[in-house]
Amino acid sequence: MALYAWTIQVPNRQPIKRVTNIDELHGVLRMLDLPGLRYPQDITVNDNGGVADSGKFRHVDVEDGFDWSVTWVKVDGGAD
Image 1 (cartoon, rainbow, N blue to C red):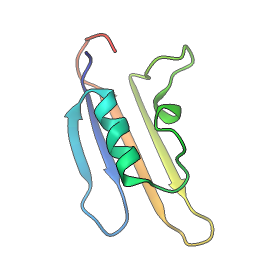
Image 2 (image 1 turned 180 degrees about the vertical axis):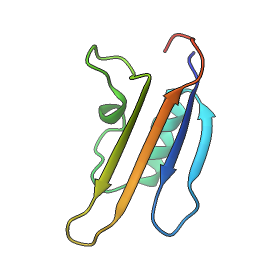
Image 3 (image 1 turned 45 degrees about the vertical axis):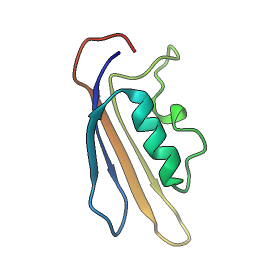
Image 4 (image 1 turned 120 degrees about the vertical axis):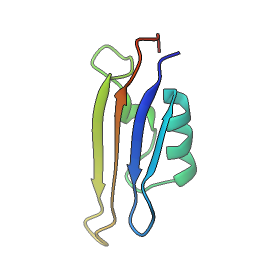
């Protein structure tokens, strides 16, 4: 399984930085239950329906300004 280096930045806490498979990133995003994110897979998908080798997603709530982001990059050539 492919490994990804990823970082989640959420207000008022230290960034979460890990190197794991993509499923673990999705699990952490679900656990955090961040606004503007229904399904974690929606933000990491590429045009072919697989996982994008790299990417970034940012959400800013227009009402309260809650601003969080996630970035990821594939660090090995394993299959997803």
